[in-house]
Length: 154
Image (cartoon, one colour):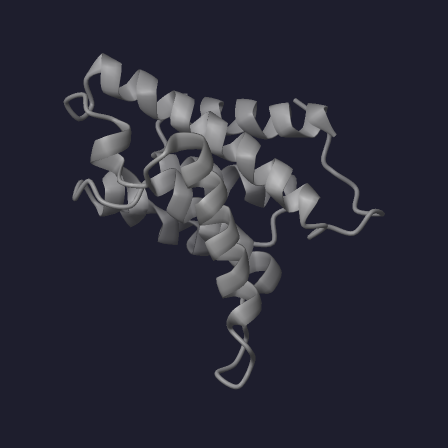
């Protein structure tokens, strides 16, 4: 499954290089790889998470986009449904992200001037790395059935 992890990293990185922000790149990548459960209108929801919540520099957009993807697996449909499965996944992935990158704050992860070449290079690394981390996490947590057919690798 290492090939799948690398595919997620490459797709997210290419989407970021193509102009999507970090959160959009994660959500679009996994939407594709999960055979497009989200429609184009739903994909728009990721836009404001880039730049650490719209340039606020807070929570990394790659992390928040990842939590959005995890919601596809364990999010609830009604107020009476338990939120704990989604909360547990989000918390576990947050901890995995911190273990890898030490912090979750965009401005701490990337200290370069916004949109400078150095900033974009660092965000590219973070976005691709987070996509790989998310794919590993999805597999480890067995969130996808074994008989799921992954789309063709690029």
